[in-house]
Amino acid sequence: KRKGGGGGGGGITDPEAEGVEKRGARDFALWKAFKEDDGDVYWETSLGKGRPGWHIECSAMARRFLGESIDIHAGGVDLTFPHHENEIAQSECFCGCKMSNVWMHNGFVNIDNEKMSKSLGNFLTIRDVLKSADDCRAFRYMVIASSYRQSLNFTPEVLQGSRNTIKRLDKWRQKLIEVSAEGEGDVSEDVQKAADKCLEQFAVALRDDLNTPRACAALFTFVKQTEKAASRGEMTVGDAKRALEVLEKVDTVIGVFYDVPMEEGGSEQGGEDKEDEAPPELVALLDERAKAKAEKDWARADEIRDACKAAGFVIKDVKGGNSVLVRG
Image (cartoon, rainbow, N blue to C red; front, top):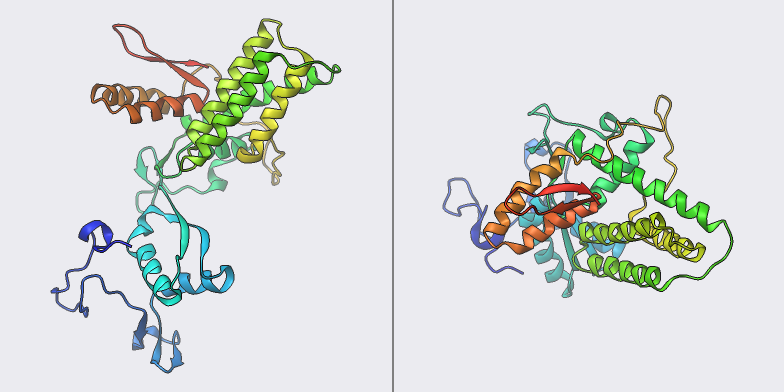
């Protein structure tokens, strides 16, 4: 409940402005009297002929179908004020209880660093972009590996990077399935510790405001560790089974191992194979990370590092030179 609303006045209509019928700047309409422009959109009530204010509909639907208090209320960041603040005000005044325990506001989708809109001619639909099963799964991972509160910048290069990540996960999962089928075996101490640490860090990240970039980074730390063990010939059948269990457990959240139902004309494969090449979108983040480090904004620097790691790349700091991205 913010006393000022909208962060101390941002966006609040000037009550002295001509034509504004408000007693206070923070007032909003619960019920709107009928106007000829409303046509047949009205109800006859004890308040007179009219219709509910815009904010009422969400409070009414939530209360009718979900109850007076709900666990999670989501929406775009642009709805924080005034819509969600007004929902809180009217709902909690009516029922005398907390409307929602958690509020989650997602960022916008940008195309090449511009807001997606029809007026800019960069409006895309899922059908426009996703032409193959690989594209669908890659898009899902791209969204999952991004912070829901931040803007999601979509480019073909970003999708390609996610596609490469999915290919790597598929390849490793298939290898684990093949090794697991060879029989039984004990789990080595190193793999068991790595598995436990991965699942613990994955869960901690999700509890931290659904920090999916860091959660995916925890997964890829484990994938890298087990890949190295296999390349050294140190992976037992038991290790493979345990590693596969971790992948399956994590996938109950990220959901990327599935068969995509394709419409006629769709294909199973898509995109070029550039597994070792970092997408330009990630490369561009290196400059931002360097600036963040120079300004001692360690939180942002770590966020960029985790985002790169979630995409399957590790940032290597070069003494006396620029940082580089290598396949992790």
